[in-house]
Length: 136
Image (cartoon, rainbow, N blue to C red; front, side, top):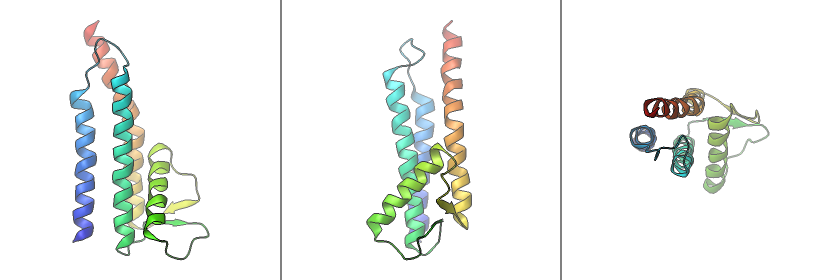
């Protein structure tokens, strides 16, 4: 039950952040602004932390989400949070480096996170381009 609640809250936070960035970007007659840059950084940070929370909650409840080469014993929860943040960041910004591999349900979660990571830049460029074309 706790896993479902934490996962649902994280997904709501991620979805709300994605919706907010596209609904409220104001460009002040510029193609790119400091506000847009900060908004993008915050969005990526929220998505990365949200997925890290999902990974940690699943791991803490016995669901193996990823496997790290050479790691066989359970880690302290602080170390698990750091590993999950790294795994989330590597999945969001790349397709991973190879030393940590998603397994089981983690594969589908990692695919979803990677899709967000790859789709977001294209969607933001399209949003800026659309706004630019409307003004000119």
